[in-house]
Length: 446
Ligand code: SF4
Image (cartoon, rainbow, N blue to C red; front, side, top):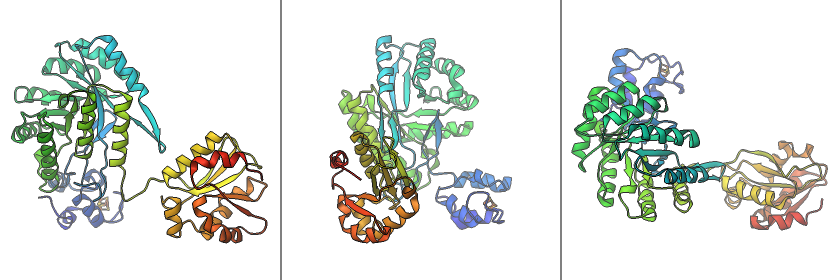
């Protein structure tokens, strides 16, 4: 078991200087105890305390970087407890035995499979390059073209430490993941990973005991950034292992299993559609890197959405920033619309306005991420609050007319809003459905 917040507090300097980002040493201690902070944030801990705390206060699942992709660092079993923090990286597999056209096709599809969604760019993250021919030079050539064309993070997969050494010599600044340490090569690969400061994956024989033996050995060598591949390729068993690993790391603070995990979905399914189902299973529980045999829009898009949903904080709706958004180059005669700042609402409404091609001003009011109807019901999108926002946001200086379009679902606030805005203002009730906005705007006259 880890130390309690009070036990940790006793080892801190107790000066309450606030440099760690929270106002008191006690608050910092509590954050350390719950895995929400890292000890490095306090510059004043004594070496002796550091040694004790480093062991006891590290996050239950070590966060680590594979190139630019952060994985691990999770602190809860279920997303409704708090949130999952670092979404799993999706990797596309290419092998040294694959022909150039096939590899080029995967690179092309990887580049094209990028989607804008609620203001975020959704895309796959990594290439896993597998040595099937013992050809280190080919592995490096593939990594070079993958890297220059996509900027993706890299995973090197080989049984041969010599091949992995060649890859590391050329790409260590990209912090690739080296796969995999086994009983036969753990010492050599551990030393290679440590010298190059690269993360390394262990590959078990399908038992968690074999995984523990490998992670303990790497830890003893001084390797910190470890990823677990249990070696299981059967869905039910792999699923059970993921749950066991997460529980052991979080509930029992069992360090040898406190690392992010890797799922070879490509080796657990027949065909890409089945792979997608396997991958979706481990997006929810609890893969940190998921390897697919190919990337196709109909497979990767639903997976990216799945990942977005699972890794969105369920207690904090996604929001757009409060403010005035000019769409289609509006001027002083352009219509003014107001809506809430629930991210999905903002993106749907702004998208419909854009597609109408009618120059417009969209005023987005902070409703704490609630949708129009919910915000209205909660009193956060009332005549008074919308009126106060419109009066202060600066839209009155941008237009010379006095018309405001409100969402159809908020029709009930129009009287109060008119009063709030003062003489001369007219409230127009817009459509209930965003899809009707283009038609509505085309008929609009100030
Ligand atoms: S930086 Fe260290 S000494 Fe300062 S408040 Fe935080 S824990 Fe205390």
